[in-house]
Length: 162
Image (cartoon, rainbow, N blue to C red; front, side, top):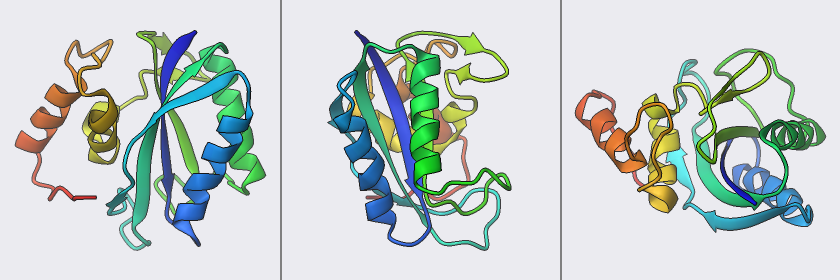
């Protein structure tokens, strides 16, 4: 069994329902066990600013499936929920990201692990630090808490609370 971290985000319609539905679908799969859930955080949009706020959270899961299988599973959930991959940084009903899978480093056309730029995203690091503060980023060789502290110290962006 392997431990993976999944980021969830939504900024359209009923945002909480949009976060809860994929969790329900993940929990129905016998190959995946949700171990921890972060709190839900309200975040300002990144990139395109003229859009509604996001709700974000992170799950820690235990799974027997490969990172590629897990990625496909998450993409299937997005499709079932009506996600269309259109413009980058735009509004979305649901966004599911595979952030970390054990200590694996993968750089392929289909999947990059750890998730690229997760160490620069407060909307990922804050909920991730809540449930895995001592997890070491396999490339940066720092804990999630250290990455968050560095981001806060070097950022002019105001940080949010849950």
